Image (tube, rainbow, N blue to C red; front, side, top):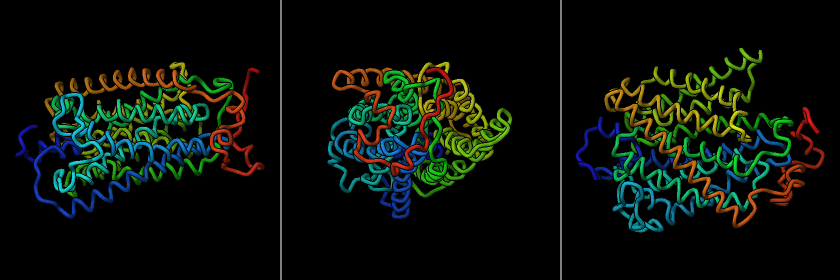
Length: 435
């Protein structure tokens, strides 16, 4: 563990989650109250993601799509309690793995992480683990078996997410020690989820008719509602990562407002320039991309720099969506383009723009550190996800039968449907060529 008598600038440099590993002053009720609220805000993001994803899919598969997000809350909350937290933040670990000293969250009673109870810190971090898994589901909607998703998700949460969180945010972690800047999860959540989603799309395979079928969003108001809930909850996601109600939280809060606003305008600008009209789905997608990109940078860059970051990230992700066919993968809801690409852009621009607040190492050195963190995250999560999916495939089929995929997965997977029979024609696939 590093020197406990850190100055505020050094604490800012190291990032919010890592503060749990530093000095232990007295309990601050104001900080505790803020983190309780922030944790609830982050929890709300997962139902928000369910609406966002659900609106983008066909009516016949809306429940299964939303369930993939909702079930992540139950699955990951239990696994995080049992082992995920201690793998990520358990004391006595090494550079790549925590420990099992806090298995079942034992040993945390009356402990403090910074100025808040460690139980609150564990809950806050658990919300990050939940939504990270839920994000992956967008790449494989309408065709992956629910049971296979659960098994893969549980393994992914424990064997990929938790160790990566340790490496980036724990004071014992090697990327933390190397000075990688990731305030609230650009690498740990978004690059990890985006790359894993792309791999999952490749392994599970494309939807029937992919390339010949236009899969039209069945409920755009759901998409807007989900995006709004995500933005609302993201304020706790980023500002809460300061682990205190202080100036750092204030900077993270304002940049989390600015970057997605700029990204939304940029996305609408690109749509208007190419297609003549801005779309509601484009507005929602653009703001989510801006939220992703600002996440690692939110407390390391100035407000004006957040505008730059939002504009660049939206441009990169917009063109990634347009060119996604080159990847030869049916990433159904563009998880890689919107989370993987925006997360990579955000992580690199964090290093490039950290000088605006005086954070970080010298420019060239910091950029090298950020590039290493991005490269490692891509390789670790990509290879790890591929191995886990292949293992799950040995236990059970990853994919539903073709007949269920064509008619929609809701009835076969859950014995329920989102709409009455007269409404299920909404969002049906529109064949634009081929057989």
